[in-house]
View 1 (cartoon, rainbow, N blue to C red):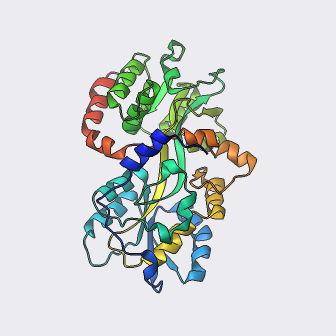
View 2 (cartoon, rainbow, N blue to C red):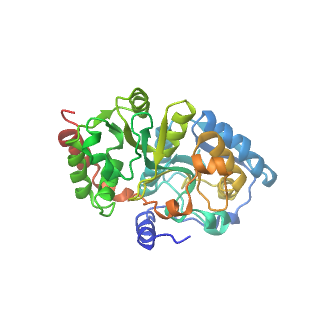
Amino acid sequence: MNFNRRHFIKAASSLTLASTVPSLSWAAGSCDKDLVVGTWGGDYQRLLQQNIDPLVKPNGVNVLYDVGAALQRQTKLRAEKGARRSTLDIALLRDNDMFQMAHEGTLAKLDEAALPNLQHVVPALKTDYAVPHIFSALVLVYNTEFLKTAPESFASLLDSSLKGKVGVVDDQYDYLAVAGALASGKSGDDLQAGRDFLLALRKNSPKVYPSTDALASALKGGEIWVTMTWKARALQWSKASLPVAYVFPKEGALPATFCAGLSGGSKNAACAAHYLNSMLEPQAQLAFAETMGYAPTVLNAPLPPSLQESVGFDSAQLDKLVPVNFELLMQHKGELLDFWNRQFRAGL
């Protein structure tokens, strides 16, 4: 696969952090204690228990799950930064939250020698501070009953035929700015181009919704015909009998990844290495794809044809994933939010 060199350089520069805690060889210690994994509940925890626990048990790993909201895990990582021992060994978070934790120095740097499955990870998803577990990407999702011609790109949303029929979600303002930059033919880092695109979109009278659930209702009823959201959502909505289809935008797509990182205060790196490496095993990746609708993060986990069509991404699409520059978004978060509230959504 010919991964775009410019995107790889951007990924390497923006997703490698000096603020992670330097770690000794993870394999140097023994695995003789409980491993505490902080995660979401529901299907995510159940699938971890069913598919990861059996892989690590032969290595003496006894997994205890600390279930709660992402904010609870972030709070715990912050509170225990610099502590002699962490109560949490592994934390699962969305990629933007994981970047924040790495930036704050709460995570240990990955030991690639102890994680051989990292060699199979999609290049656009690799960082030096977290293992990418499952992912989706920002795509165009449209109602096939109202929109007979599929849109090709984010730029298609500016077409006058879609006036009043485009929907966006309020809390995706930063990703939409990056997508807008891509739609303008610019780098995803060109946030001014992204703002200009959103102002052009505003003239097409888009509708702003507070959540993806509200977006789904509007899409189902024909209040809107098209939106930008995660491919995994399109699959969930299709399973719920919504007449929707998706298009991978020709400008490229922004990935959304659920990751696992090692707490900087963990004294259990040897056990953690077994667990994190097992999260990338093909059979475990397949189980998550089948149940949750998120794509594998590794290149050696082929999906059955029907699942590949609905969940996966082909090699050309993987080449066009555009890593999000979280450091840039973090630096400009305040001004982007101010722009969104004052100049974009006001009056819509």
